[in-house]
Image 1: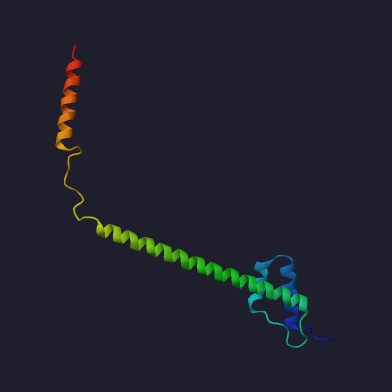
Image 2: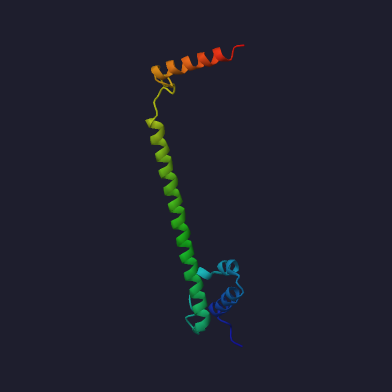
Length: 122
């Protein structure tokens, strides 16, 4: 009786796990470190399935890393923008009070209020 090749057994296990959609278990089994059996060769269909899974995972992980870098860049830019906004604010938060209306308009409004008050008297 011959001793089974550990690489071939691992290939079979990985192929079974991937066919069962057990990606987490395949990762724990060593999916990303898998290489074809150097002694007996590997079934081409199984090797292709494992290689495709490795490629998909590497692509997804690279996309996740790019997304995280983008998020960090956006957060940094927002913090820089907020710092510039705060720096541009005057040191004295109390601004000098300006009248809401020009003097002429305020005088006209005051006269109108006085006339309205006279009319409403009994």
